[in-house]
Image 1: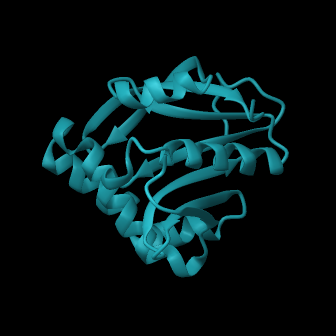
Image 2: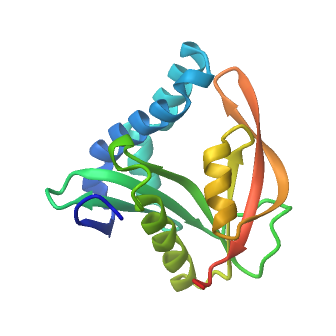
Length: 178
């Protein structure tokens, strides 16, 4: 069960700063031990600054669902990008889960499920029949989570983290909640 009351809401432009800080912290928490400080610094500084997150929030095809606790504190988020696709993704119309992260204090309590369901509902409401994501091949916890939710591997891609080129699996599933 999710710790306390957690509510999902769409992020707005005014959330760019707090969202950028949270994105940077949760990405760092997840991958710091597997990568060099230099690679992490380059990626985090370029991907998770307020200007970049603000630009993503301004796009009409990109949405962030923020999970906030009863005090209004951000505890997780999922980024959904409509009509984003790789060649290996098979769908009439699809959406990508660009990122899905929860604060460590809320991991293992159902927040990931709540965020994933929110992403599926958001994609379906946008007319997408399929949702896909890329997950680092070495992230066994995330891979197990997505497998439990019916995501199937349809290909591979790479992810540039600083100077490190990393291998990801591409997973997809229907947006139908069943």
